[in-house]
Length: 280
Image (cartoon, rainbow, N blue to C red; front, top):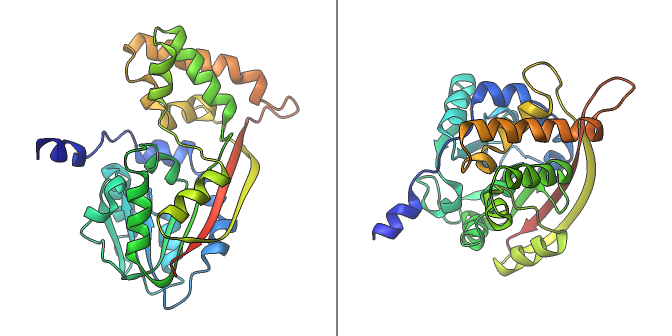
C-alpha cells in the first residue's frame, strides 16, 4: 500500500503560468492540424489530457457540448480556472495523467473523444505507466470514440536534447544519469502505433512532421527561457551554480545552430507525431 501511495503522489510542479505564457505561447497557436483531426462536433464530450493553461481547451469547448481539462500542474490549472472558469460545461482538474483511470472525471464509456496536444511526450515518459495511460483513454471512450493527439516524435528538438545531455555530463552526471534525467519520450510513428494497438485501438491515421518552430526571443525567453521552462528535470541533480553553468553552456552551444543570421530569430527542430486512433 505504501508503494501504491508513493506512486500516486502528485509530481513536482515545475510549471509557472507566466513563464509558460512567455516562452511557450507558440504551443497553442500551432494546433490547426491536430484540431482539424479532432474535428470537434456540437455533440462531442471531450477529455483533454494534459490541458496546460487551458487556452486551446477553451477554444475547443466553443465547438462541442462539454470538455474536461486535466493536468498535473496545479499552477497551470489555476491559470486555466482564472481565465476560463466562467465558461459553462468546461471543467478543470489537477491530476497526474499517468494515472488517468484514478481521476474523479474518469468514466468508462463516457467520452466521445479523448484529446491531447503537446503533452503525451511528458505523460508517457515513464515506461511503467505508458500502457495504463493509453488503456485508460481507450476505456474512457464510447464505442467508436477516438483518441486524437499530437506529441513530440522521434528526433524532436534533437539539438537542445543533445546539448542538455552534454551540459549535465560536463557538470558531473554520468551518461546513464543524464539519460534518466530527460523528461521526454519521443517515439517513432511505428512504436506509437504498436502501443496504441496493444491498448485496443485501431489506428486510423498517423503522421510524423518535421516542423521547425520559431522561438520567442525577447529578453525573458529565447532558448534560455525554453530550457528553463521545458527541461528543469534535467538539472535537478545539480547544485544551483552547476545548473546555471549548464544552462549557459546550452545557450552558448546552440546560439549559432539555432539563430538565423538575417534577423536574429531562433528556431528549434520540432518533430510532431499526430494520431487518430479509434475504439471499435
